[in-house]
Image (cartoon, rainbow, N blue to C red; front, side):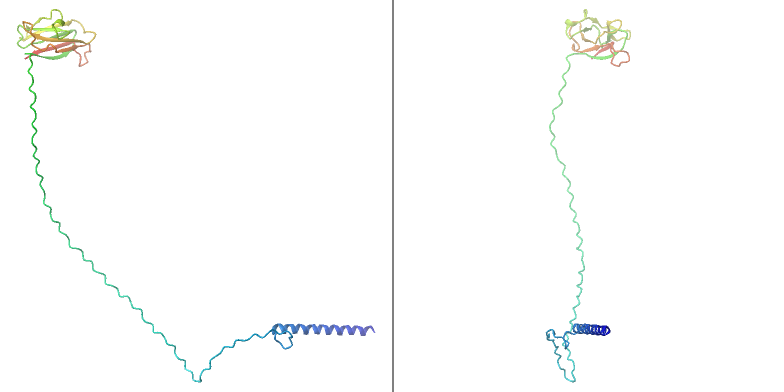
Length: 235
C-alpha cells in the first residue's frame, strides 16, 4: 500500500517537471517570435514598408545622366610688371655766387684826445726808496743853483719842518743836490707821511706842493721798505 503511493508521487513529480520544461520552451519560443501560433497575446501587426522597385525592360540600357562639362578655370595671366624708368637726373643749375658788397661805414668823427694841461710847475719829483740805518730824504735837482727844498707834514708853508729851507748845493759828483735827516738812527715806529716841493729864492713853488710819500719801519727783506727816500727834481 505504501509502495503504490510512492509511485504515484514520482509520476506526479515527473509530470510537473515535464510540464515546466514545456512551459519554459513555450516562453522561449514566444520571446524569439512573439507572433508564434500558440501565443494568445500576439503583438499588433506593424505595416511593413515595401520598397517599390521599378520594373525595368528586358534590355534596359542605363541612360547616362547629363554630365556637366567642367569648364576649365581660366588661368590668371600674369600682368607684366611695369619697368621702372628712373626720372631724368636733374642737373643742378649753379647759383651765381653773390659777392657781398663791402659795407661802407661812415667814420664816426672821434673827439680829439684832450690836450694835456701843461703843469704850472717847472719841475716834477721822481721817487725811489730803500732800506737804511736811519730815515733820510735826499736827491738831485737839475739846474738847482739858488733853489731850495721844503719838507713838511702838509702841502702848506705852515707845515714846514724847522725852517724848511734846505739849499741845493753842488755835490762831489758835480750835480746839484740836497740832503735832509729825519732820524739819524732807525725808523719811525709808525708810517709817516711827508710832503716835499721845490721853491725858488722868493719862495715860489717850482714843483707841486701836494706831492707826498711815506716812510715806514719795514724790515730789509721787504721790497716796500722805505727808510731812505731818494727824490729827484727833474724838468
